[in-house]
Length: 137
Image (cartoon, rainbow, N blue to C red; front, side, top):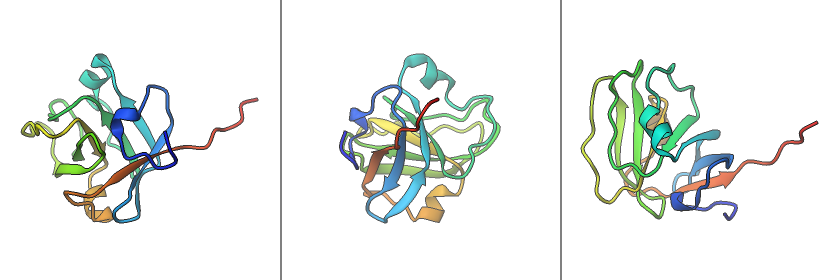
């Protein structure tokens, strides 16, 4: 993966990444949580506390989400294979569903208000940057 790889398809389990809106020069996620397997996608954010600002969860593959059994609203970005925003749903409240977006390959769930604060819009290009390795003692 390059320093700013726009493709969410290149992300592998265990990677530590941040997400940047390359179009607007805005940091969206400081450290991305990954849900790439069937069980982690099924669980998602169900039963968990609200996402902190600059936190995010990438679900792949995913073309639509629901917020059943969730405790708080979320912002949702739907991304294509190139990392472009193809649809968005700000402030999606608990017990709601989105339509399926055929052009989406994954979704990025964010804290409510993240879309508005960053100015993220349909067509924006996102990049996934590796976080620096930290020394372990």
